[in-house]
Length: 426
Image (cartoon, rainbow, N blue to C red; front, side, top):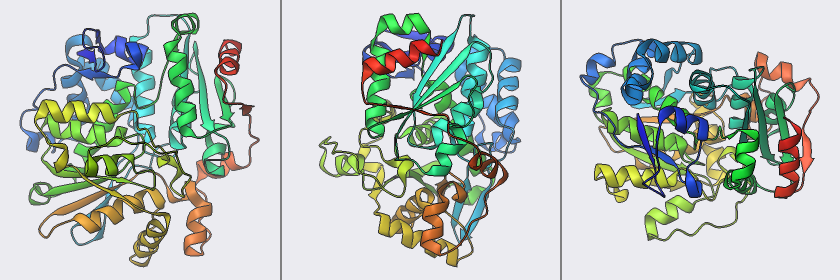
């Protein structure tokens, strides 16, 4: 597998290099030089989840890793289902929260951990990542206890849910969590500065586990195929998918699935009040505004890192950006959709409800709708309980960590202070 730096096309790397390196020069994102057209999609959709995913990822990675290596990586990473649930005629929810940290990031985090372990050539590695909520838990649990890998996770202090924080800030061992005095974009900016510091990168073996790492995106492709596999052929031939979007890795993976041959009619990028992309698609002007806090905090991102990959892919495939649907959903609209879904018998949280709302507004007659539910409702217990007047029971993993002490270190939004932390954890 060959990948190139979107910003500096002459920088080309293998899959292993991209996984180990994370970012290219000038903070450029890596992207595959070739996306194979998969043969006989209908037959592929008849396979079980792990077998199908192994074939998809083997086709992407090519001969750099053997089929048996990829199969072992997938089998270890994907030990939980991704079921679809009917919420009304012609509309399905894709539940991506059945993994160990109850969020879709488990797929990418665990596959990246397996990828890094497979391609690593010795030496200590420091994983540095920023999270707006769910990435932190998925990465922390995926890498917890792995030899020669230290993980440093930055998150905006006071701007993720208490239960999200508990799930990954109570582990200790090789997992180091840092509460930054700022928002998610500030955390992302610190990560980028670290990667721009070549001496620091070499000194601590710096790598990123954000959705900028290509292995995470590749894993996410697989559950789009899994969703389609659970539908009838006629349903998936008119499939419209609404994706709750913050850093836009999930939508990038969906578009890659389409490029590989999955018959997805169109996508809807659903955001909260941090609506940089919907405004860009409407006006053609990229105009990020200061990030605002919402009840769908995992999507509180005003400068989504993965957007350049979407533009690159659409240009290569000849897809006009004007064919990509979008919507910005307010907290009030999200709450109304949580209530609507609950009244129909389906318990959802604000992120999934945003995708549902956008889908219902834009789904045409004769189309099948799918919206992504990216986290278990209990991860946003305070918000959901407040909307519905309920008392959601905590699943086992959340109940366990809710009773544990936080181990995070508070830090000002200062790169020199972060460098001190990074060197200290070695």
